[in-house]
Amino acid sequence: GHRGSVTSLQWYPVDTGLLLSAAKDKSVRLTDANELATVCSSRQDFEINCVAMPRTASGHCLIAIAARNPVIRVWDPRSNCITLNFAGHLGKEVTSLTWSSSSEWMLISGGSCGQIRLWDVRKANALLALDQYNTKSYSEGLTPLPDVEHLREKSGRTPHVEDVLYNKFNRNLQDWVNSKKLVKKIAESKRNDTATAHNSSVRLLLTSPDGLFLYSAAHRMSEMRKWDLSSGKNTLVHFELPTAGLKSLNSAALDGGNHIFVPHKTSIFDLDANTGKRYRKMNGHYDLVTGCVYNQFYGEVYTSSLDGNILLWEAEVLKS
Image (cartoon, rainbow, N blue to C red; front, side, top):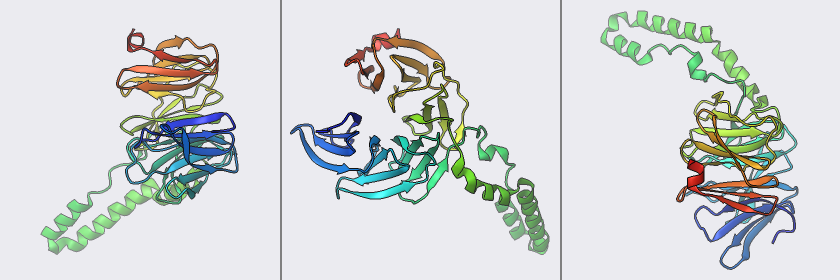
């Protein structure tokens, strides 16, 4: 077993007999839950903050590892070696990881500097760094592109004015490019690597079941945010949480509908996932809540705490 405090636990998505775990002893292990024996393991150079596997994976079984280092390492248990390294976070360490619930290839990471990056594990560079000030999607800020196909069809029907239409099309397109300063926008987009999603260390990353939205929260302040992953837009939803930031890592849960359960110190807050409105505050633990899981089959929530207790919150309690 591990010789340090365990930081992550996850059932192997395609085999419920295997358990993925990571600890501060710098090791990641796959354990056979039936035999209570280690199947394979990987040792890192730094203390591990968290690990994650995609729940929808069918083409790979890659495991992402976040440690007290700005480089994300991807471990393939089949070959028992580190197959990929992703560098780009500005802070000293990667604090949070999750995979997209709609794509087995998209990895989402959060760092100690407040950055959230989206990666395609089939590519070398990050797809996007979320910007907390991006409250309008790029497409909403542009006028429609001149109808290229319409101009081409019209040119084909009237070949005697082809030159005129061609010049008009080029002029319209050039005016549109100039008015939107696209060359400048493309040049500025390269500096998006410095964008931050939060002003402090990212403590929570959770994707919606459909993969369209991402929920994130930070360490210092109650700046929990909801992101539109199709555009990278901050939806500006205000979640009714206390002013003090989150202490535990990646311990929130979605019920698949409108409720998101977010642990905060010794309590669990039941919030509306769309509006951020607080439904209820659930008290029962006497120390920091470290884990929160929703059981979609029974409608129950399970929470763990440093007080040594695991509590079950029944569906009747959650609906009251």
